[in-house]
Structure formats: structure tokens, C-alpha cells
Image (cartoon, rainbow, N blue to C red; front, side):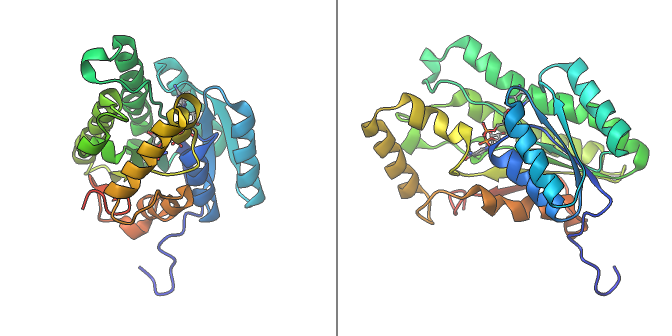
Length: 271
Ligand SMILES: NC(=O)c1ccc[n+]([C@@H]2O[C@H](COP(=O)([O-])OP(=O)(O)OC[C@H]3O[C@@H](n4cnc5c(N)ncnc54)[C@H](O)[C@@H]3O)[C@@H](O)[C@H]2O)c1
């Protein structure tokens, strides 16, 4: 590497970020554009949010493309990839961010349709997007895939079993971690790196609000907040902007010898 080279520079690169209309996805789009990448971002329902993210990218002087795409539909996913390559020229970075949650329930009471729904988007969606992007990356002999899992895919939390039992979500995210490692080794000789971010509890996203703010009573909310601060060594939830550095690091040459890794950003929970 030449002296003075910015190893985090993403100029000339094209990123595809799924679920870029809110939360972590929007922050990832912004961070990648701040470091020079053009960004194709997808949404499934929130077009307004996706357009707002695109505006942020444009204001940073980068190109953006907004595509409506349900990550669970193989034809739509293929269209998302073809459209990105046709309009922006390549895909150098894929961020598999789109994800959902479903009603918390212990396993014996868990609705089978909730299990199927979460697995179909949080795990099958990552598989479908990766599967469609790989031929593009193999052809150009370069690429960085960044999967967004969760610390719930790394370990179980006894302290949360009564408040937030989410076996469907945890199993899907554990699957994402395994898929990260499999993809990394299968394509390690093709110039493609595959890594995973496992966030802990963060503020400011729809997913994080869904149950706490929309469905829970004040007492449940307080129990949840107390449990999170008790089990998090740093004693607080993360801000989504605190994940910016990780996505830029994994997308860029700064992590050029790193593949198949899971990086937890969780205030120390998985230590
Ligand atoms: N918020 C947290 O604390 C936290 C912690 C760990 C992991 N995560 C993960 O971060 C990712 C982003 O979640 P978030 O917290 O920003 O929530 P969010 O609800 O704000 O964002 C989720 C995004 O996924 C998109 N999406 C949902 N279903 C889709 C589908 N079928 N097809 C395409 N897009 C779809 C949504 O439109 C949205 O843009 C998820 O994978 C989530 O599991 C979040």
C-alpha cells in the first residue's frame, strides 16, 4: 500500500444495501457514501424512507439508486442485482441488512407462521441476495459481503427469556453467522471477503421500537430496559451511528485479510 493511501477509501466502489429506508440500513448507506461509494438501496414498503436515504447520499456527492425489492422473492432479488449493475456499473459491496422480527413467544407457544416468516426474510433473504450477487463479484474477482446478524445469534440470554423470547429471530441470526462462514470459505479464492456484524441492543430503529413501544405496557418496558442495562457491561444501549466504522472497515481495504469473521458491537455483552 502506498504511503498516504487512505485504506478506508471507497471511491469508485458500488454498494448494495438491503433495507436502506430506516434504522441501521440508512446509517450503513450514509457511512459508505461518506467514504466515497455510490449506493443502491432497497426497500419493501417504506418508499418515503428510502427516498430520504437517497437524498442523504446525493448530498454527500455520491450516486444513489432506490429499488423496491422484497428480499424473499428470488425473481425480485435478481432484478435488484441486474438493475444495480445496469445503472451503477458493478456491485463491490453487499450489505445484507434487511430484517424483521415477530411476536415474542416461548417456543411451545410460538406461532409456526411467525417462525416461517422470520426465517424466510432474516435467513432465506440473506441467502437469496448473496446467491444473486456472487456471480457479479466472482466475474470481477472482488467483493465484500457484510451480513447483519445479531448477538442473539451468538448466545442465548436467560435474563430475557420471560421478557423477550425470540427463538425464531435468534435461530435466523445464528444461521446468518453460519452462512457467513460458509460463503467466506467457498469464495475465499475468488477475491471475495464475507464478514458479519452482530449488533447488540441499539436505539433508534423500527425493529427495536416494535414491541417495546407499540405492544408493551410501561411495566414491561421498564423491565426490559433494566435487564438490558444490567447485562450490558457498558450499561447502555448503542446508538446506530456507532456501527458506521465497522461497516466502512469491513467494506474497505482496511480489512483486506479478514474473512469469515463475526464482529460484535454490543457494549461488551459477548465478552
Ligand atoms: N436495532 C437493533 O438493535 C439491532 C440489533 C441487532 C441486529 N439488528 C439487525 O439490523 C438489521 C436492520 O434492522 P433495524 O433495527 O435497522 O430495523 P428497521 O426495521 O428500522 O429496518 C429493517 C429494514 O429491513 C427492511 N425489510 C424488512 N423486511 C423486508 C423484506 N421482506 N424485503 C426487503 N426489505 C425488508 C425494512 O424495510 C427496513 O428498511 C436487521 O437485520 C436487524 O435484525 C438490529
